Length: 148
Image (cartoon, rainbow, N blue to C red; front, side, top):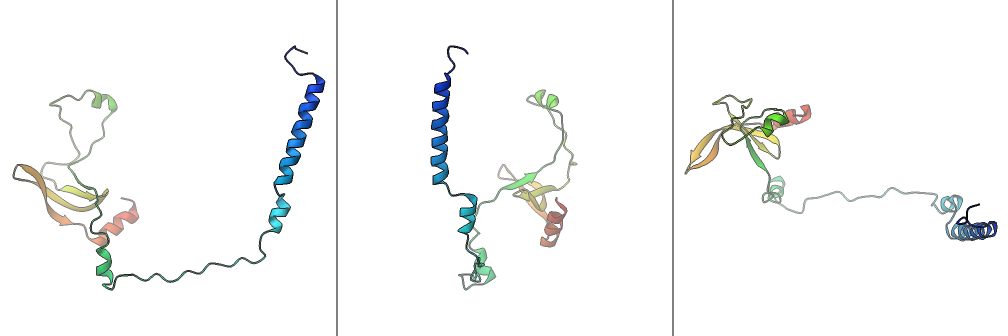
């Protein structure tokens, strides 16, 4: 036995302490059969009142609640896939070729979903987009169900 290891008497004392602590802990914690015995015999399903809108304006009144919520509007010029090594070689004046053709309509996305297409315009030295085609609600739902 090494000089740092406890003697047999010390080991027996530690074992007795652990046994006492475990016995005390198990006395304070109910057993599984005691817990199961406390479960009520009959469980009822909660009932909920029907939801009724608080506004008297009907569906048109409900939309007023969301009119001030900001959304992300994005105009997408085009996309491309390039390797990281080519990105690291980009410098001022570099040209990145996109998949869109010149003169092709730009996609207008709201929170990542296509809602319209349009063409780029310049108004007072600022870029803008003139909407040329709005995606119908049924077309948006069809695209959502297809996953894009």
